[in-house]
Image (cartoon, rainbow, N blue to C red):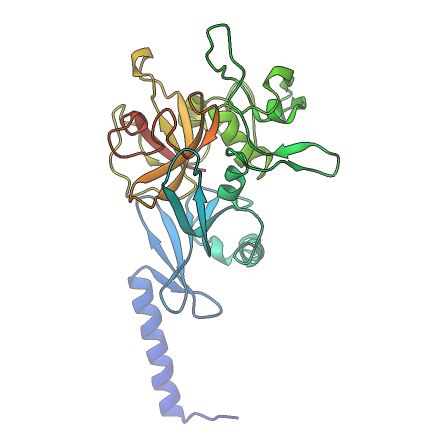
Length: 323
């Protein structure tokens, strides 16, 4: 047993108190084990957890369930439509409830985070990649194809891809939502996902975010891109100023990005995608399901999948939300 003389013990306690006071003044609070601590930041309000070496372990945004967690390096690519790739060392996972300051001391978060930080299960971005061109089919124990390369929708009489393919159309199953609304799967849309259907598949059906149909309540993911942008849940990280958004400093992987790709039809949001991050050329790349590419893509068929630069979607980029 190590004994400490009373005077020295008093000095040590005073030093510890001073350290805690300095941390509090800096917005920094020590966590339990491993020398981890968390810092409160603004724009948007969030908690950043770092390890003893100062490396970021996780980013948790007030009011959002998506959490950025440090993980193994992986690369997203679609060689058939772009030479650019996106390499990330973070995973994007869905917490069981929205974050708020101080939640790191609550049991629900401690239990979830202990499992999430070491999880090797596909994250939200891995799940999104399971619908890209060439992605292999995946089936559950009952034989239901729940993943694999998706199309956008069948051709109409004008040889244009039809929208309105939701997650249950891809699956080929009817779906009743908590509000009692029923959506019957259409056989000609089987295997298809439009832009919001793709987001609802990734975040909702596959990852457990609540879904709704018809009138949005703000508590679940509604059906259309404009509803998700204006009436859906989550936290705004880039506000819609009804003009091209060019400041990307608040974005992080997994954020939903919104576009007005047809401004001649009015200022309304008409497209949604998922932000991936900086690609191998230094540009901000996203993944979405599009008519011109006939399905989910992070490539450049029918318009570059970039938020910056001279392309269609860069000019159409309006806002971003963090679920």
